[in-house]
Length: 219
Image 1 (cartoon, rainbow, N blue to C red):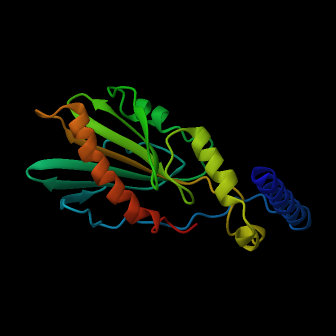
Image 2: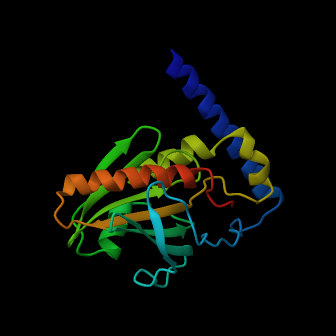
């Protein structure tokens, strides 16, 4: 009964928002997509129990990508163990499949195993040569995602709300906010087992996600 009432309210909201957007399109046709504000990653991001040692633009992943807004590489150290974190701010995405991104940009990496953490979301872990990695997409709203289906569901259930109607009608924001902060963490395996390395990555990831969740770039 509760789900039925929730579903009706959700469908009514989608219909209302859709009609308003359609009316705006007919009366004030504007084919341009909402502009994405310029964004620069901070040089320093605090990470619990880790010390920042390097902060620089990404070189290995820099390719011509019309969806790339900004990028940054952070290196942290704890007990002589280095932790690399690569951040890519992407926009106008139609297929947000982090597993596919990993295969494209890290061709030697193993297929990721997806995991979920309550209050954080989905992410994938795996091995890339002699390193363990963790990769995920921080969403503008909703928890982190790893597959396109998860990202799409976040857009429908998190983006469509009465609170966003005016910015959408003014052309300041898109109806579906197809932006993503792709995060890729990695540490050397050394003498540790993959699972032990994954646990270290997860601890860093949960702290990293908490910091960025409330600091997602403004549209």
